[in-house]
Image 1 (cartoon, helix red, strand yellow):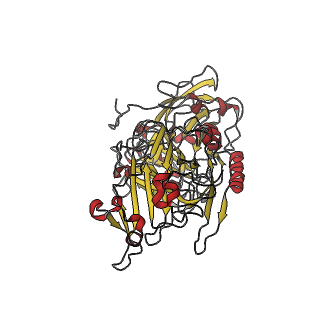
Image 2 (cartoon, one colour):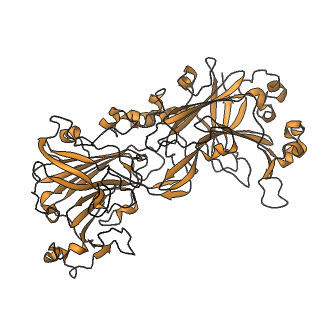
Length: 607
């Protein structure tokens, strides 16, 4: 089926709005029994791509009584941001939720940000302005206000087959109430927020210009067309874009298409009686999501930060867990200042394993349950990663073991073979640094690896460790990287792309389906084993008591030995037709003239 203006009505969502049970206090908390019993929408989907879930969970519900039409939003947001405080600012330029309510010849737009700032507009189709009688109302007098604009023209975009609309920017709905409640701290990128909720009460009498003969308040069986959406800026990895997520996808980046608004049916039944109350198609559990996630998408702890089902407690983001984690990190992490460095270098005490590890990506083993979990990864500015990322390490006489826990709502990976292209997928990275050289490993969610060995040109020339066949320049023909001038060879290094770490083991466990655009993934875990014997060429000078011969001879490394390790995550973000990578690290990786950073984690082996 198509609308009168040629838009497909396939997949339109239908919802039954019930009466409230008892009065509602519009405070943004959505904690009254009416909201607790209200059926929530499915997870919002991409505004442009039908069936693709929004990166973060967003749901809505509708209620009503004799005086008001109520709309509630539950918004998951790990980093709540907002700056606009003046009413009728362009709220859509930052994170917001939006409600559109349509009549036959007009529609109303409402926008709300986490600070509680709103924007309102009333639109009248120009081809119906006279015939529908809008010109008879002073509030829609085209000459009576300087705040009338057009929408849908060449300049403003939002083209529609019906033509342009008059946009009354000064119009305010009388008697409307709204409120926001934030579960977190606004504009603090260093912590992890849980999200925010919004509550709006539209007075029925304020909808009189949209009623088109329908009863105000609504009656049993009445239907209205409404749109519910969210716009969320994603600013990661030096790129910024703003995807839109809506109850009903529009197939285009444009909210102003009433033909694609959801269909809201009104029932005289009190909310909570004889559930379910949704009409055909609404609401259903989004593919791949358990029913429990529908029940409470914001407060349900397991939804945030849990990778698989093996280690939920340490990954859950709550205020209590946050405080406990900070206290543990303070006690467990020794920070030592480095002369000439702006950042501090963290020291990680790496404990022995308690059992023989089978490297399969399952981090539910006792060793990992007892291992010291790192703090959350962050970007170069110290802002937390978009998705929770932590790591831990352990060791025995044979290998160094590294585990990663990675939250990921949209796992991006295509490379199944171990090639350099693995680095174009989402992946974790391990950098092991030694005098004159370093090893660089990348592992993607499909378990494919990419390995590189880098040796500084000066070290390759002067150090006998590198005068061996595996680092023969004529045979392996490494690429030269680094160095900005012809004479600055100190920053230049040989990059051996065909070198492989003997005995490397890599295991990955995925909780999701990489590449599926109609599913919400939960994340993946990585488990690595790096044999000490294979790291012999990085060992000299690491710490007192540690020598190449000792490692090469398979002797156990000693407690107190110190290694320099860099841990990172590169995440592919695919939104609004753009695909790019963001980098998040445990320690800031500061590259100066191509040199490896001295801010790498100090890994101290402990009993």
